[in-house]
Length: 410
Image (cartoon, rainbow, N blue to C red; front, side, top):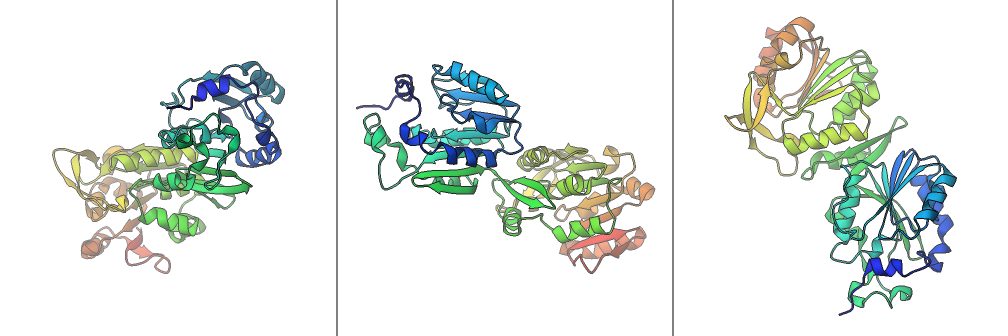
């Protein structure tokens, strides 16, 4: 059986780019320039001889990955012309792990390369490119009804590269597709595992828990922060400002912490999230949003030191996971044992554990009288009411907050 050898194919070609592709270079360039604005480092997966390098002018670093080194001299000359550092990595096996950390690059650019990946590895290649970058900018051929004759003599029909359904692959992996454009059979799009929106002229990016349906759906639907009316009330009334020190207990994916840090500019934000995968997404979200003055803790906050295990797991809303004490599991500590300095604001969203959390904040509350935003489970309304009376707090902002989320001031 004839097998398409991608390494042999490219090394035997004098011109790594077909005449058909050359004719649409300008639309490629214009599209690429728009998608990589603000990027500092890029991986070009299949740079050819550098015909698109002018799109990278102003970028600090470009890494090229290719199956051949025959055009390395041209690539370096083009990089020098447009003023960026360039390094070429030659890989005769494109279908294995790329040795870069998660989200290392601002973007990966893949121009007319994806359709050269064999059908049994295309999804892996797309996953790997997404893993190492914050977004993947794709320009590729896509024609599900007509085959591309030029490559027919090189590629057996059962390996034909123009029949990929990229939408299906992206949907399966829960990747967000945006900025889609088409030129005849050319498809241009950006995919990433984060969703982005513009809030007050700031680009906000969100990765989501792989099992989340609830919060991710609301953020995508509104194209804004979850519980935005609460967050804006805190900002617009001056309850939180750039001097505020905040504890976000039950931070989940970082929705509130990102707002506290990036939008309000709070001086300190301490995030607590015990669910391991949610914690990893929280950290990634803070990184990709360049949230400053934020410290993360992979623990639960409660009334005592110890450990907890997951008791009730919400299959489509991990942010509603419930924990209970156990000799195994994740660690839990009191807030008083973690933070001994001024604390101005405490946000608590811990699924029925709010009383336990407050018992672990006794000293902080006594010394600093922070404002408290707490989600109150219906089973805890009576106990929370008693706590308010005992600790001389009162509910404020009732015109904005509801029966489930209380804002308390001492």
